[in-house]
Image (cartoon, rainbow, N blue to C red; front, side, top):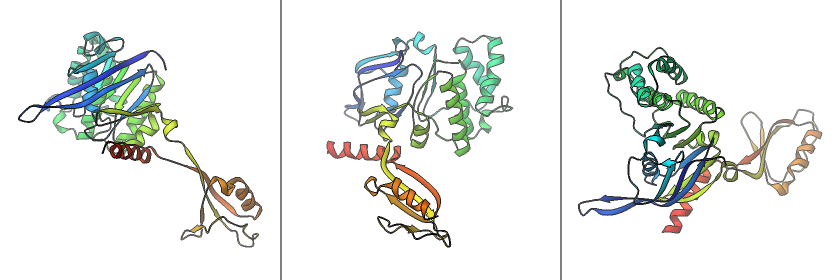
Length: 312
């Protein structure tokens, strides 16, 4: 891990709720560090405390306990925000503004000068797929287009750190694909990216590390490959050729698809490599041989369910 870009120690966030203003702890003794150049997926079910944590990092709310530093400075300070780009969970903009005007405003707040904005605004609009729409009224934008514009305003100041709350909210499949390409490009440029998302397939494709919280507490943190790893099982798809040799003994009856493909799930004790070799020697057509592995979604659900059961 490189230099710490976000450092949180013992963070707790408490709200007053209800008529009697009963305290509700949204975040409980949370500690973690985000290193320079990392892409971190911040995961948890609804109500886990993700948005509260992000708002505390941004300085939008004051924690009831703990310490937060962003780029080596106290969270919420002007110097901490100077090199930070942020996209909130719900980004709302004045409907009679134009993208160019909006980005000019946010770019000015980021400290960019007029000649820099003239160059930067077309660049970020091109990057998020809004080139040619710089003078359209925002009231004509779909939710997905507004989300793209929100990403553009987060990028306008060329920040070292990007924080996104529910990154792909409102984007269609093409928009999510374009967003992944943008983030991959930013990752290659060495940007640090910290984002929450319910699109776990995106997290799996983009992140170096993940952080999972539930009921305000951290329950897992670590490299993605340590969580989503091969199970040690294999799947082979093959087809017997007409006139080929007899099939070797199989550990169990295979599944057969409508087009005559045989599919067999193999455990390590089935000696998959030996069986594959025997099928080749029997002149079978090998269509696919792959290692099965868990998905992030499967592991996420398992971890949350186990934590809830333990709490109960």
